[in-house]
Image (cartoon, rainbow, N blue to C red; front, side, top):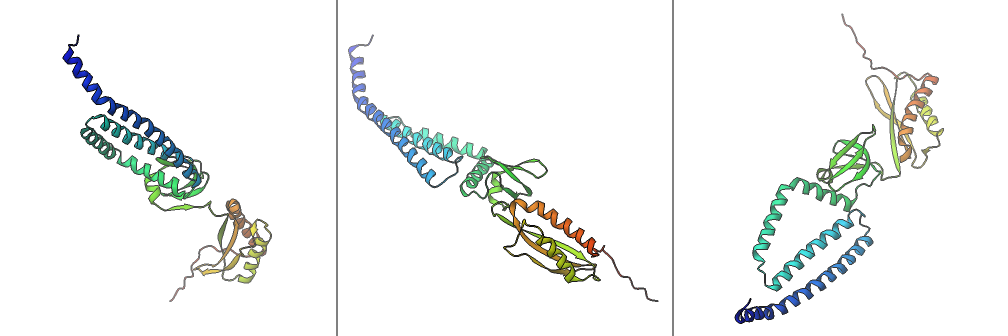
Length: 269
């Protein structure tokens, strides 16, 4: 049983802390409500800015957690709880975790940058970090590529975000540069006309921009003629094969020689 003196002390403490506790409780309720409104407002801004859907939950959750931690620290301070040691401990734990996960945090930051700047999207064919493939998935720590020979490649987002990325899918049209070698005894204009005929016969080869056919170089064993044609991105591979096969067949029909490497040797007595 408490004596009258103990009851008096408890009563005084309750009277002393009750207003602080009530104020802290009101602050907590209002603070949580304001944080909820702020998160909705930020979500609307991210939607208006067309931020990637996979990035919005991360941003809103991160901001919500940070604000709620700050609110909790403030409320505990209002009650009279000493927060200096707690904040110092929280900071030390944060630094330790950051050092232990420095590599993962780099990939995480890289993933955020890729989601913000969007140098590629799911389904794009890209070349990066020595690999070529179709983007299958952009994760927060790595990007998944599906190569042409159906291999899955996981590229860490850290070096991916700071390295060179070649996106082959962004532009609707691509150019095919093909080189055809003829012998020095063959007629250049005749060979060029054959290549032109092959190009004109294929409706998938674009006429605008206009294609170009010209002598690229005079090699040791051949005259090299290059054609540059524009095609739709989706037709690139098929038309690359088409150009090589069709021109070879037409050269054979017209008696145009594709020479083997050769060397002239002069013997002196």
